[in-house]
Image (cartoon, rainbow, N blue to C red; front, side, top):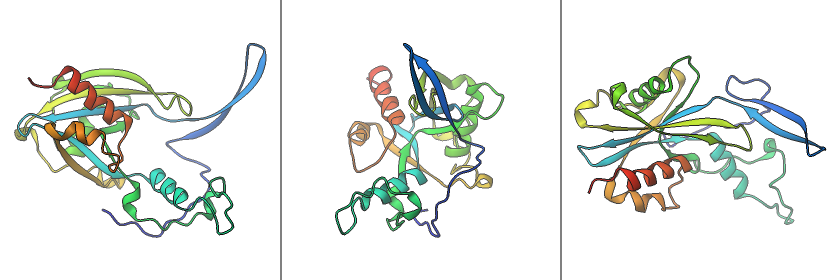
Length: 219
């Protein structure tokens, strides 16, 4: 999982996941423009295993994070010129693969005409291997994500699971090329994990952990 090869980059001219646009508008009489992308809304699930008293999260390779790590590793050339604004095509993809891995909630995009709770249930089974009844998935929040670039909506759910509810090892949808590690974070280590900067993680994961410690943590 920690190895990647044959890395190359090219302009994205068509995609089933993102579409770039430029919006023209006036605000208080002043003409403005804003570049953004259209993409799918999402669901995320905070999973807490009561048998092990541990959170169940995922770890996976994120190409955008890897590219950022590669560009940040060589910000200046030998003459001292700033290279951060150079075309990505000229970037050297020479960093180790682990620069692109992040810790995240079990999550997925809303790309089906189904209730978000059903999509959340499917993602938990697919990524983490737990078969959770719909009634055991609790909606925690509906929130804005990527407000400057996409304006999408995220749906955060919470689910308590037990070892008996695990029916597979998870790992993602093999047919879609997903490669996902299932990670368990013991409850008593979760606050330290949140602020361990050596383990890249999403703001959604941090919010979910904080919500749990504020609202759900067992006494």
